[in-house]
Structure formats: C-alpha cells, structure tokens
Length: 426
Image (tube, rainbow, N blue to C red; front, side):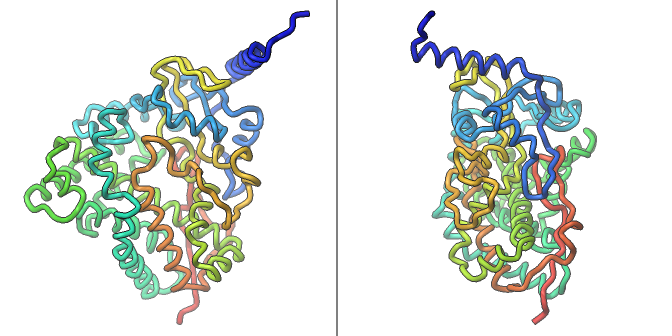
C-alpha cells in the first residue's frame, strides 16, 4: 500500500474537490426567496456543499459563484482578477451585452470607477477619496441632520400614512449626494430617473440607451456649470485641481450620482421594515439609541441588499485559491447574501442580532472596489433611523406585512418597492 504524505493527500483532496465542482451541472444564480428577509434558500444549500460552485451567466458562459466568506473576501482583493469585462448572471443577455457595448463606447466611461482596474482606478479614486473619509463625513453630519429634519417635517405635514421610500428615504439620499456634488436639490429627477431605468431588469435596450445618453448629458451640464462658477464641492475641487480629464470627471460624477442615492435609499427602507416587522427591534433601539451604530452594521450584514458582487470579476491568469483553480478568462461572482450568512464567519448567521459585532461584513464590498461612499451611507442610515425614532416613536406599518411589495428577481438590489407607514398625530 502506498503511504500518502500530508501534502500529497491535501493535493489529492483539492484535485477531487475541483473536479467534482467542475463536473457539476452549472447553476443559475438563485433569486427565489421563501421569506422576505432571508436570502434564497438555494444559496445556503449550495454553500453547505462547498464555498464555490459552477455558475451559468445570462449569456451562456460558465464561470464560478463564490458562496463562502473567506474565499469571497480573498477573491475581492486579488489583483489577478479584473473588473474590465462586465458579464452578469442575471438579465436578458442581449440587453446586457448591448448596454455594456454602448457604455464602453461612451467617452465618460473612462471615469466610471467600478469598471476600471489600476492604475486608472487608483488615480481617479484617490482624487475623490478625501470627500468620503470618516472625518470628512463626520464634518457633514450637521448637513445630513438638516436634510433628515426637513424630510421628517414634510412627513409630519403630509400626515399618515406615507410611503417611507418616496417621502423620506429616496429624497434623503438624493439630497445628500446633491450637496456633496454641489447641485440643487431640484436636480434629483435628472439622475433618479435614468438611474431607475438602468437598473430596471424589465427595461428594454432602447430605454436603457436613452437613459445612458440623458444621464451623460446631465453630468456634462453639471461639470460645465462648475467650470463657469466653481463652488465648495467635490466636482469643483476636481476641476480646479486639474488632475483628471473632462471625460473622467463626467464619468465619476455619473457613478457618484447613481450609487449615491439608490442603494442607500433601498437599504434604509428595508432596514425600517425589518425593525417594524418585529416590534421588539424598534423598541430596543428606541430605548438605547447609542446602539444604532452597531445595529446598522448588523442590518447591512443580515439584509445584504446587493444580490451579488456589483460586477463579475475575470481572471487575468490562472489563479489558485485554495481548493479553487480559476482559469484565465473565467468569470467569478461573489454572492454577498451568502458570504454574509456564512456560519464560519458569523455565529448563528440567520439570526438578526442588533448587538452583534458585525465588523468584516461584505455589504459594502471589499478591497480596492469597496464602496467609496460607505462612510457617508453609514452616517445617513444612523442619522435617519435616529431621527425616525425620535420624531415618530410609535411609527408602524400601515398595512399588513403580507401586503408589502418587494423587488428582487433579476434586479441587482433587493428591497421594498413601497413601505406605507403610520403614526399617531401629536
């Protein structure tokens, strides 16, 4: 009998694992949920079989779906993977391919951070990073509180019931990014409307093409206004510094407008639903507002509104990640809902524990493409939830939980479409 050395046995185990996974029938990205606050149960079943499986993308390509926390975190910081070629596991493949082709042909694409690799990504991100540090965002807390107070006043004046998304969450996040970029609050429709079309899985190629053009035209108008009359804002500073080209500034503006409002509004609305759907959660934070910061982190982990890593990654060479070997040219997607519920990282991951230390969750991504606005989003969520607790301590759902409409499916995000809420008039 041949005695295998420890290294040889480990290598054989790795080969067997890779072969078994490689030969398995590729799955399509699971999106069907049985409970509104839990990821698709198929993700858990797949993760229990191993941290990665074969994935069929919308265009028929076969790649990998990462389900385990450690592997997902490692992949997101690995410089051997590129974000250059966008292939999505969801959506009409012809529409996805057509819109990707159009976006790449547009001159401002060279400033869209989430589609760039170093060194271009590093240079452009560094130029804007100072506006999104913890210190810079903390200095803007008064402005965020002013916006929150204004939306609370508007809610109170309108009277219950109201849709929390349209009356509070969406204008709050939109007004915040307006102030960072130095545009009037009245401009919100100019970026909200095309953003909504671009992420709508039901919109056809013509609608998305028109939205891309409208969005680019608006961003160019904004940059032109800033050149004529600079103010105290990010875009003005970029123009004055003269380190980025015009197309780069326009592309960066588009990404900040787009990412700076929709994800935060979705996260805030779903968080409030989560707190109100089990009243003890809301009451616990009302009794201990100092716990809001930790609660926001746990909600980010537990809800994981990004249904996948924002974009797929492509291996630029053969990459050995433990048990997984990704061949050059293969696509990989990290399932954020799955990695944030991995029991190897978080004890009792399917339990929402508002007192948990959820540090290390991947709700904002990880590595060089980690959300540049993460600290701003955290402040907005904390100030908004605190404001709602103080102004409307008896806030409640205005309809039964079963009547709350959710969106997900082939959408990049998961959340509630509308959240009718009520309170007792004072």
